[in-house]
Each structure stands twice: as C-alpha cells, then as structure tokens.
Amino acid sequence: MQNKNILFAATLCVLSFCSPRGNCDFQKEPLKSTKVLGFSWENCGSATDPAVMKALSLSPDPIIIPGDLKANATGSTSVAFTSPLSVNVTLEKEVAGIWVKVSCVNELGSCNYSDACQILDILTPPGKDCPEPLRTYVIPCRCPFKAGDYSLPDSDFYLTNVGLPPWLTNGTYKVVGVLGSAGQELGCLKLTFSLRIILGA
Image 1: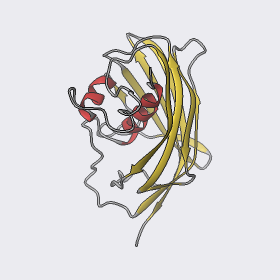
Image 2: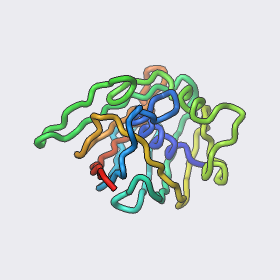
Image 3: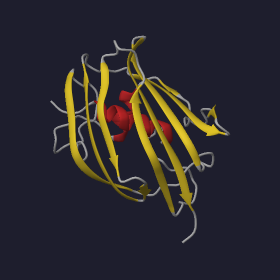
C-alpha cells in the first residue's frame, strides 16, 4: 500500500490556492517567479485522529516557482477515506506580528469544502491514470483510500508558473486543513511558509 497522507497535504495546498474547478487560472498575468521560503509542517489534530502525517520534506529552500521541487512523505490512516470527505481550510497571514484570517472569496482562502473526493475527481477524472509519480508508486489519486501506511520516496516535480490572486502577496502564511467525515475529525495538518514574489525580467 502507498501514500494517502501526501495526497492529504497536496489536497490542502490545492484547496488553499486553486479553485475546486481544477485549475489555478485567476485571470491575472503570470508573475516572473515566486519564492517559497521556510516551509514547515506539523500535525494539529488530537492524539486520537486516525490520519497522521509522519514525515514531509520539500526542497530546495527556497522553492522557486517556476522550478524544480523534490518531495517525500510518509503517513498513516487507521480508517478508510470515502466520499463525502470534508476539508475545512483556514488561511492566515502574519501582519505586524498578528495572524489575520484571509476570508473565503470565490472558493479561495479560508473555505469549507464539503467533499474533497469530488475535487480529486475533477483533477484526475475517473478512468484516467493517476499522474506521475503517483502511478509509479501505485499511489491512489481518487477516493476511496484504504486504511494503512503510506510512503512517497524522494520524487521530482516541476512547478509551473501561475498567476496568483491579488491578495496573495509577500508575507508569511499559515494554512490549517482539517479533514473530516460524518462529523468526525480524521486529521489536521498545519503548513507555514513565506512568499516572496519577484517581478520583472
């Protein structure tokens, strides 16, 4: 069996910055590049949550977009994940030492999504092969996800440049994603990072 928790983390990132319609087109001219610095993560749920991230590593630091990314992750879940699978995302920006919540606007920001499984079906429609490297390591990219231990070895990705929403400016951000089903919390993951947007040639 292979990774589900890396998909959990990836889903949180997608939900934070990309529309559930399956794209990141904000109708804004692409920026030259973006630096992601000081990425860190931690589990933020209770000790009884069935889904736990055990390791998550992204490099280099800073991550340059567009550019190459190396990632690995391990995690486990003691229960199967099936539809509907809710994800509640809280996005905050640090302003003068205070964390300020970013509102949900056009399904972006601090938003609640009733079924992440439907979003995953949009990203990779049923019947279509999962993208690499998930396919190589036999990692599912759609619901359901079986209970078990999961692992993604060091894998290389290329991050393409996209136009960012106007409110996603230079600064330090915190994303907290809570995964749930039938009113039960399944897992919680907190990501912290800083953005530096580079304009010009």
